[in-house]
Image (tube, rainbow, N blue to C red; front, side, top):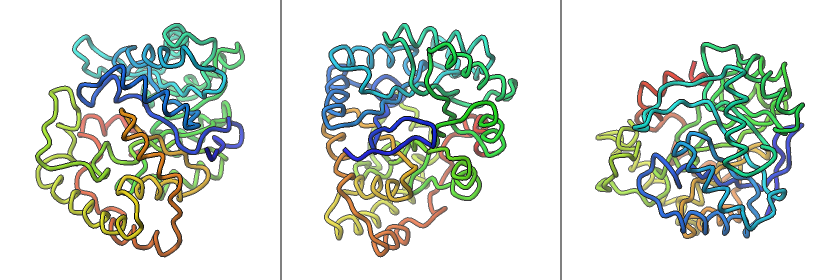
Length: 331
């Protein structure tokens, strides 16, 4: 497994990370045994970065990760944990809480659910507009000083927030959506984090399956699958986006790889400071994603990919309007 470093102050991790949210929440039904087997297969393949959140299934995901790690060496794994999202009993999102007392409370419950004595990277899932980021990061710094957390991460933060957070304590990585059809970080955010020596852990590299090469326009979705309310999966937007995928499929076929492998390979090629998080929920999808590590893209390949899917070509926002309003990175 190739490795990359999370910023100038962070840990060395596998070049691909595994995002586990879909095993518990927001993507319809999942199989617990297959989820655990997929985490095991990832670890066996050399993946060391696991990303979870305390609000994924309201604790379900952390307990799932705990089960998967029960027979493994915890110290060989970098646990990246998000906190701060508030949920209702019906699963509704009720806002975000970045108050220092809440930070420490969330961390306490995550430590207990995961069954570990420390969290490797700890990050607020969305910036709380009612709490200065200095206060939130200061609370994480307190947890670092006490030995409960190793590193500060950020999620979906904009340039000013990143600078202010980094001034309180060095930030190892910014977790943010980045893919062929979500390139918003390139103009304002990427230059700032590279100036500061902060890495990117990129989620949504296959845009939640949209550009995986496996999505079909007639696919039925469970009631709790948030893609049913996502602009990019709706109506004429979906038609436009799937046409882009078919153009990309031609490039992938010429390269002898799958669409998903080409899309992940493109993110890997954007810089050694970028670690894609793949949201594979099964061993089959994981195996395909791992194949991206063998994809070598030269200048001609990159030009062909970007001609197939030009920047800004996607139809629809990456979230519905209420969720977009919570993204400090979009302001």
